Image 1 (cartoon, rainbow, N blue to C red):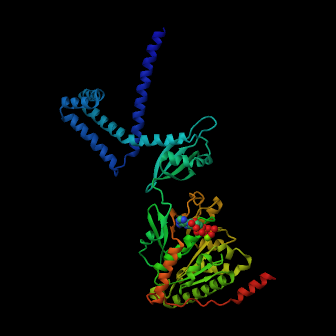
Image 2 (cartoon, rainbow, N blue to C red):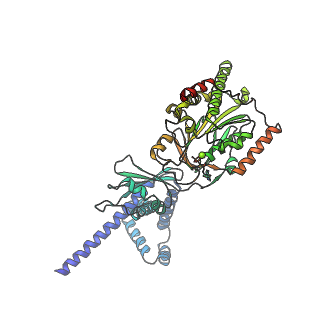
Length: 484
Ligand SMILES: Nc1ncnc2c1ncn2[C@@H]1O[C@H](COP(=O)(O)OP(=O)(O)OP(=O)(O)O)[C@@H](O)[C@H]1O
Ligand SMILES: [Mg+2]
């Protein structure tokens, strides 16, 4: 009885075993089908290899092939080929076609099958499971751009927070950088966004500046697609934000330097309420005006509004849509504000806020561009309307999702790695991670000295004098009423 049972078991096991093998072949084939893409080189290579093998099998010498196979692989493959010939005698064409398709799909799908297995292993290693012991399962691996892909994982109830806590373990398992982990549109799934290459932790100003080809442009930084350079006119205003120590001031200064270097006719107005420490080297240039306190800064903004209105009159008379420095013989004007919250965050400075609002709304056509920088891009610091008029956003690491959301319309800035100078560059709806250009103080001073010498040697000349900044009585009135 027991003998009978064990015989039955053996047969059953053999059937199950064959079933499992067939299922595995079927599964690998499904990966092969998923990968079918007529532009794919791998696919054509596989088809050529399989087709060549079949042609050799059909037209070549069986004995020679068998001997060769025996020599190379021993007994298993020749058996396969004998079986193949046996089958082909029975129903040559159907069998051949089936074998051709299955072999192609198996070879073709194997790489993908292995990839899923490796990714699944990385997920399993992170030790995520539900209370009932179910493990998250990889359901799709999809390309999302150059060097980028996303892994879609069925969570079975494991929360997003638990996945996020395993970011480092996934980076090691996938051997790729995990850029972010988010909930998928499909309920019960998360998406792990991967990037094959990583950005450098340092991008030098001069290496990037070599890629500045157009005048009136500045460096955003090194992106995964290469150096990112931005002409200011097509921006037209830029908000720099991020938590303390991320690299705002270094980026602010490097932006001002790129603009000074690339623009033949430019005036800079730099408002730095941290007593002017970040912009003091710029003050020596004849085309730069700096402000160290609130009153000076507000007066400069007032003069800029006046200049903007004057330029609008010029445009009205000429019928042009925007100021072109060369055609209209007017300098491009850039207004940089380091730590904007210190200037606009105070109630007493309603006038400065009003000026900045007007400039953000209208100054683009007048060839006047704003670059405010702030730790807190909140409405108490910069009005929502002004924020809406600053489409370019360079956002360094933020400590909260809420701050990141205000700064760049998403939580990507909170998820940035803690690398100095690492930021999210947003222009409209396009977000890219970048490593901002770094320049040390000594090199900065040398660069500024070269520009100063160019002015002194008359190699450079602006179209206009710097704006005449007078103390505004309106400002004084507001200050007085604020003190009452
Ligand atoms: N692009 C960069 N590459 C490498 N290191 C950088 C970069 N930018 C900044 N750092 C380093 O980080 C330090 C702090 O940078 P920075 O002063 O620009 O920060 P911040 O965002 O302006 O801070 P705070 O809000 O306190 O003013 C710098 O002294 C420098 O050492
Ligand atoms: Mg700073």
